[in-house]
Structures are given as C-alpha cells and as structure tokens.
Image 1 (cartoon, chains in turn yellow, cyan):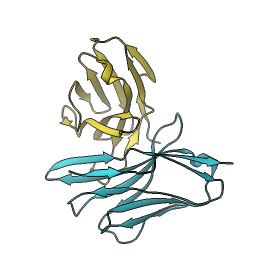
Image 2 (cartoon, rainbow over the protein chains, first blue to last red; image 1 turned 45 degrees about the horizontal axis):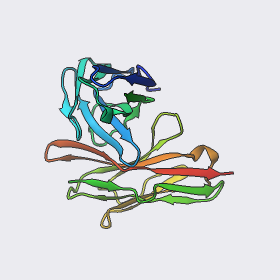
Image 3 (cartoon, rainbow over the protein chains, first blue to last red; image 1 turned 180 degrees about the vertical axis):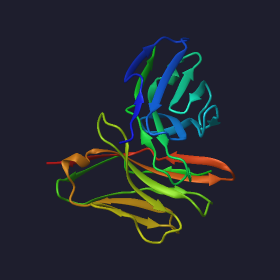
Length: 115
Length: 116
C-alpha cells in the first residue's frame, strides 16, 4: 500500500514564526503536491514537484515555499506565518507517467492554527 | 480558466438507497481527466473513480458510477446501495495540461451523510 505521512496532525504556531510541514511517501513516486483545504473552497494547489530539487507553483504559492532534497520527502515552508494561513494542509504523491491521468495518494493532513 | 463546481454542499441518503452527486466544469481543453475523491471523517482522501475525457463510456467501480456528459461539461457520481461507510466529503477534480502548465483543480466538495 502507498503510504503518505505528514509530520504532525495538529500544529499551533504564532504569527511571524517560520513553520515547516513535512511529508514523506514510501512508494518512490516522482510527483508530490501540497494543497490547502478550506471549507467552501475545496482543495487549492500550493506547490508541486515532479523531481528532486524541481518545483512548480500552483494556484496559491504566495507566502509559501517548498523544498525537495530527497525523492521521498517534500517540505512546505511558511516563512513568516500569518493568521490567514490557518488551514488544513494536505500532501499528496502520484506515480510517474502522465501526470494528469494519475491518481493522487494523500496524507492524513496537518491542521495548522496560527495565533 | 478551468473551474469545477459542486452545487450541493450537503446531501443525505438512506442506507441502501441511491444518490447522485453533481459536478460541472468549464474548460476549453479537449484532453483532460475527471476524478471523484472521497474524504471520510478524520481519514485520508482516496480515489473513488476516474474518467478520461476522450472515452465515451462512463466509468464504473462496483457501486460507484459516473454520468459523463462532455458536451454539457457535467460529471455526476452515482452511488448505488448506499452504505454507512459512504459517509464522507466527496470532491470532484479536473486535470489537464493547459498550454504546457499542469492543472489539478478540485471542486468545493459535497458532504454526504448516509442515514441508518
């Protein structure tokens, strides 16, 4: 079974803190994704990566950065957390090949609260 | 720009009954893919069913089937013989390679409750 894990289920941070959200997948997938999930807005793509050290902006990259130093790990960084970044963050991975066709495998999510 | 619309924020259905969740989308692309994902309460999101736009035949997976109307840009999910374990948030999603840029767009979700 594909397993996508995220470092924390719940996280509380202060405004202005630097926040790291970690995601690890164990199926050697090339593609990895970070989304945020908000009620009434669905899931919105923040960043994705299709290879080590490669990254592409999604629809809402402002205020976020990412790092992919190893194939299995994809980190989301909030350089200076703000209250409007309070949300559920979902990580996903998908196999190589036609990216648009492939199923995404999701982690359990990290619920981040910024005070 | 592509959009995905789920117009039913919440629905309920009696156990063993059939329910249909609606999804419409807007795109000028010809080649794209559509998905339904399920997010059970406090559990991970999983794929329910996938449809390729160039295929006329509607996809089916056991009790789950879709009604794909390409001209109408509609992609509804039918759940037959509903079970308590079908209680979840359901998301419709669209993907394409739009002018060389990868797009993966989710709808706002429909919360389905199956009643005993």
